[in-house]
Image (tube, rainbow, N blue to C red; front, side, top):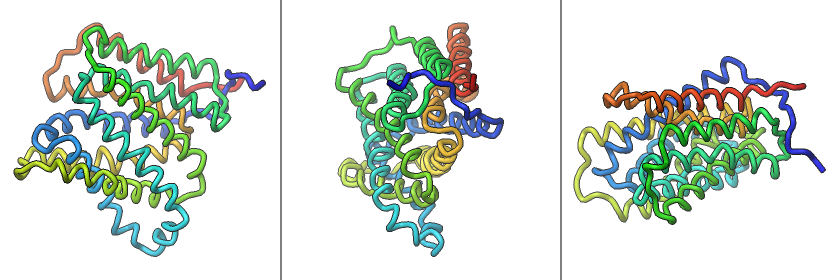
Amino acid sequence: MRPLFYDITKIMHTKDWIILIFLAAIWSSAFMFIKIATPDMGATFLVTVRLLLAGIIFVPFLLQAKYRKHFRSQFQGIMILAVTNNALPFALFSYASLGANSNMLAILNGSTAFITMLIAYFWLKEKISALQLFGILLGFVGILVLVNPANASTTLLSSLACLLGATCYSFSANYIQKYAKDSNKFVLIGWSLFFGGLVIAPIGLFNMPDHFPNTNSILSVLWLGLISTGLAYLAYVRLIERIGAVRTSTVTYLIPAFGILWGALFLNEVITLIITIGFVLVMAGTYFANTSKPS
């Protein structure tokens, strides 16, 4: 029987760390802009606009001959990711936010790294080192310290929605690693964002607000679509190519940590000793999970 614990020979380089931290910083900033835009635009309509906007910026390039020729051969992967990496998890987390506070959302979203590791082990037969598992578990403890689940409240359905959303992200990361190795990532991500928006559009349009969004909401959705979704997903796929799905998934541990930094910088939120301890645990866990060396 194949043992669970192996040393992984791929080591992260400086460029990989830069991409990982850049991705965490971008995705963590999204929470501020979602908070600004959602009350004005509604959750599902915001998701629709965000995905369509992210996809539309790719379309002029995707219609060029050098990219257009890949569309038919990659259509199955495009549609799978449109649902599992975009429309479904975005909708699930939007629904979950109605019955759970941000602390519990962060905890359950942090389970993505552990779920990704399990899927990679059983589906991709990926080798998992003891140090990598230790890092993933340590990072999750750091999230518990950061968001303090004792003060969190959530309904059962919201918890299930979060876990299903995290599983969607985990499956998608492994799918990209397994089936998209030889595909054109620009085509795959660009069209999956666009079609993800089309998939959820009927629900979003049904819940469209009856007024024109204010300036802050418009600026927020532009950031969410162009930067936090479009640009971020390009970096995300690039990272999976370089370091694998499990290591890339540890970005979900850095997101709440960077979210706290954004709050301190722009919302005048106080960084306490407990927050500092949690941040150190998250950073240490992410480091251990991404620096396994061969024995």
